[in-house]
Image (cartoon, rainbow over the protein chains, first blue to last red):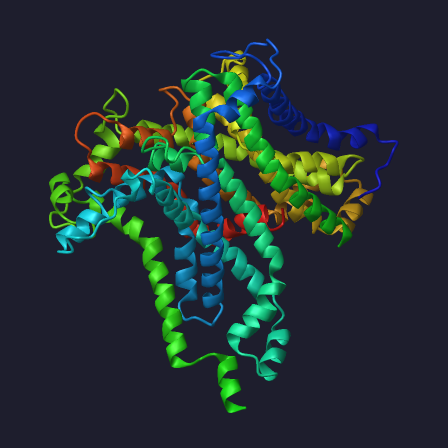
Amino acid sequence: MLLVNDKNQVQTLLPKVVLSPSFLLILVFVYGFIIYTGYLSLTDSHMLPSYGFVGLENYQKLWRLPLWSRVVKNLAIFATLYIGVSTVIGLLLAILLDQKIRGEGVLRPIYLYPMALSFIVTGTAWKWFLDPGIGLENTMHKLGWLSFSFDWIKNSHYAIYCLVIAAVWQSSGFVMAMFLAGLRGVDNEIIKAAQIDGASTPTIYRRIVIPMIRPVFLSAFVVLAHLAIKAYDLVVALTGGGPGQATELPATFMYSYTFTRNLMGIGASSAVIMLAMIFSIIVPYLYSELRGERRS
Amino acid sequence: MTTSTQNAIGTGKLARAAIYAVLLVFLVYYLLPLYVMVANSFKPLAEIQEGDMLALPHVFTLEPWIKAWSTAQIGVQPTGLRPYFVNSILIVVPAVAISSVLGALNGYVLTKWAFRGANLVFGMLLLACFIPFQIVLIPMARVLGLLHMAGTIQGLVLVHVVYGLGFTTLYFRNYYAAFPDELIKAAQIDGAKFFQIFLRILLPSSGPIIVVSVIWQFTNIWNDFLFGVSFADFSSLPMTVALNNLVSSSTGVKEYNVHFAGAILAALPTLVVYIVSGRYFVRGLMAGAVKG
C-alpha cells in the first residue's frame, strides 16, 4: 500500500471514485438482486413479483414437488459422475503427458479446445452423434454391426449419462491442464531421490507426486462442482430436459417454473437453493485462498 | 539394482506403447464430435440420412453452409444465422471493452491505492464471479424493463459488463499485485498523478493481462446462452440462442447438415481465438480457478 499525501484531497478520493461505479454495480446487481430474489422466495409471486409474505411456504411446496426430487436426484448423479470422471481423466492424461511425450505440444491443445466452445455447440454436436436414428448406432448398423444398440439419449434411465459424456468431453481437458500445471510444479529433485531409492514410477506417483498436488484436486473439485450446479445450456441443447424429466437439473427447473409455469415464488426459492449450494462450496474455498495469499 | 533402475525410468517399450495408445484414444474422443460436425456439414441431407455419420462426404456441397448463414429459418424468419452473428458481435465488442477497462482500473486501485475495506470490496467482486445467474434473472428482467433496455443490445451489454467485472478485476489485481511499488513511489515523487501513473507506468506493461482478460471475456460472452435467452428479443438474439432455435425447431425435416454448419459458425470465433492465442486462454482459465 502506498502512502498518500493527505493534503491532496483529490488524489486521496480519486481511487475510491474510480472504483465506485464497479462497486455500486456489484452491490446492486449482485448482492441487491440476491436479497431481492431471496425475498421473492418468501412471497406469493406468480407471473409477476408480488409482495404478499408467505414465509417458507414456497420451500415446503418445492420439496414436496416430485419434479424437484427428480431434479435433486439428477443433479446428484450428474455432479458425482461429472466431477469424478473429469478428475480421473484429467489426472490420467496429465500424468501420461508428463512422461516426456513426443507431440505433447499437439495433444495438449486438442484435449483442451472443447473448453473454448459454447455448450450449445457441444450439445448440438453430441445430440446428433448420440441420436440412434442418425448417429453412432445408425453408423454401426451401416458398417454391418446390426446388433449394436446405443439409444441412451432416448432412454429416460440412461439419458442423464449422455449429459455426463458431453460435459466430461467439454471440461476434462481443462482439468488435465490444471493437473499438468501442478505436476510441472513438483520439485524434480524429490522424484530423482525416490528413483535412486529404487521406487517404481507408479509408486512415485501414488506415494509422492499425487499427495504433493493435493491442492489441485481441491481446485478442480470446486470448479467442476460449481459448473455442475450451474449446468443449463448443455441440458437445453442436448436433451431439453427429457425424455420426460429425465435430465432436468436445478437451472432448467428454475427457468421453467419462473418463466413458463409462472410460479415465480417457487422459481425464486429454487434459485436460492442453487446459490446456497454453490456458496457452501465456494465461500470456504475463497476464504482459505485469500488467507493463504495474505500469509505468503 | 538393474531391474529397479529400469522400473524407475519407466521406459519399457510396452509401457511407452500403452501410454501412446491411451493418449491416442482420448485424441479421438476429443476430435470425434468436431470431425462429425465438419464432415457432415459438407454433405447433402440425403447422404446423412442414409449414410454413415463417420464417412467423409461423397458429394461435396457448400449448400448447408450457405443455408445456415443466410436462408435458414430461425423462428419465423428465413434470415439464416447472419443477423444473429452480427448481434453477438455488437454485444461482445462493447461488453469486453468496457469490462476490461473497468477491471484494469479496479485492479490498479485495489493494489496500488488500497484503502481500508479494499479487501472486502475485492472479496465481494470475487464472489460475484461464481453466483448462479438464476439468482439474478428475475430482478434483472425488471431492472432492464425500468431502464427501457429490455430486449435490446445495450441491455445485454450492461448485463455482461456487470457479471464480467469480477473476473476482469481479479485478473488485473493479481497482475498488478506483482508490479513493484517502488516504481510507483518514484513516479509520485516526480509529481505523477493517479491517472498518469496508470497510463504511463502500469498500462504499457499490461499487454499480457489485457490479452488474458479480453480473451476470457470474449469467450464467455460469445458463448453465453442464459442471458441471451432470458433478456433478448427477436431483434437482439445472440448467436447461441439463434443456433439453438435452428437446431431445436420442430417444424419440417431436420436438416442435420445445416445444423452442423450453423454450430461451426457459432463456434468459429472462439475457436479462432483459441487457436491464435491458446496460451493466454489457458492462463485465463487457470487464474480463475487456481489463483481463486
